[in-house]
Image (cartoon, rainbow, N blue to C red):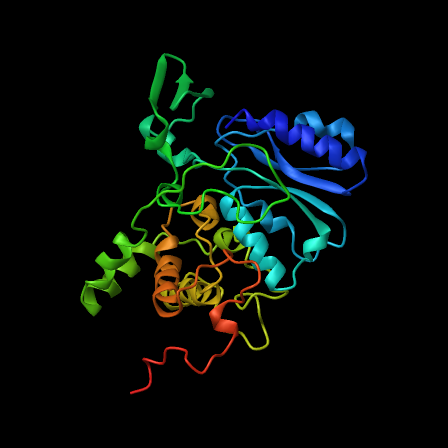
Length: 315
């Protein structure tokens, strides 16, 4: 995917030179291996800093809500779906955007690479043809690229942008996979087993809210965990409060989550936060046949009403 870099730069240069946008949001190469960073440019002089490879996992749609200017944005599949959600939820207007679509074959999981190296960060990393090479002093490792993909990328079924103004590469083949194998395993547990499972899952939580801050859907002016009048959730590491935060956040993004993986990527203690949101995603798809952000003019089922909506909760 490094070949996209030149085309992204060309598109950004053209858009800025022709005054078609005020800013372009993309990525530039990070200061440490495997960590590219979001980058906003406003002049043609900055274009050559734009960069793209498999370490651009952060969801750039997070930087769009309530922007007043004209924005060019680099968007892979999940980013583009979140852009659709933002448009539907009136966070930004379609006419403000010029979307540079990037067909994606998955982003690398930095934690998985570090685990392969006994937790040590590589001093050098490069993508080869279907391979990833990492180097730290005497330890020089090369593994298959797919081995290091983020979990959400392994089961992504919308790798191509669903909305764009131009593409920087040919569309890639979409994956035909079962997205909910892990969800069904949890559903098959008894109530007691599920309780124990989720208690262990969130036990390391620090309540740092990195998952919330990284999520492109969490843009409420005041989050329920920050509300003081009334105070819905305590500020301590009390288990009840921690549990409440994770479950309420999952319900808040139900029918809106695109499974971009931003929450898990941001978690400093590696909690598999997607186990909450994927259950919501599965239920919405089974009940309403709806996937978030796929169709640009279809509102999410949980903010609409139809007489024929499923009502299995009425007994």
